[in-house]
Image (tube, rainbow, N blue to C red; front, side, top):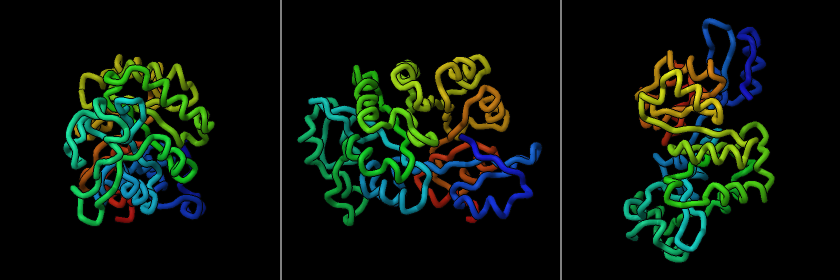
Length: 275
């Protein structure tokens, strides 16, 4: 739920919310909107993406959410990795879908980022839920769900087993570039906020936004297509907007000025309004 308060209550607001949660003034209304910081694949500017080291760093940096990428092993285990192949971020080769969980778990997912991260493993979805829920929000991206029939049901089951299918304060969000997958996720988890991802300007038309709003709570575009008009249109359709992927202070500053609801970034400290 979006937090708002009058500007005149600035002192009380400062005491209530951390810098990462502070809202930014909307000049025309005199209201403040909460702006969430999302650690993209964890604080992946500082630690190897989609590993416990990166997620812990995101928590330490007081991000509001960590963002994770969910795929499935050959033998049906939900694992956290971005690429559909393991080649870039591990010492292994091959497609995630063609490797067993034991094969995936044996890989070194940290050394590519630095010797101090040697031995970091690819986490499982249930490990992430158990380690972080209640500590930080979790933005769950279904990565290439078309490769994994039934993955929506598996994710839904893991959430239901932990009573996370009815998250408080919207601290669980599911998103994907695959819109049909998100329609399915919405039907399976009607109380969990749903996000659609895009970098396609064609998806920003008024008609498209209305269609997304029928099942999605978040419209999450790449920052290259964000405009003040788009932010206003998304809000007018009853959705929030989180934008990605911020890797510079300039990009963070731009999105803050656009009054987005969340910034998805490799560097959570870039979004601190004191910087």
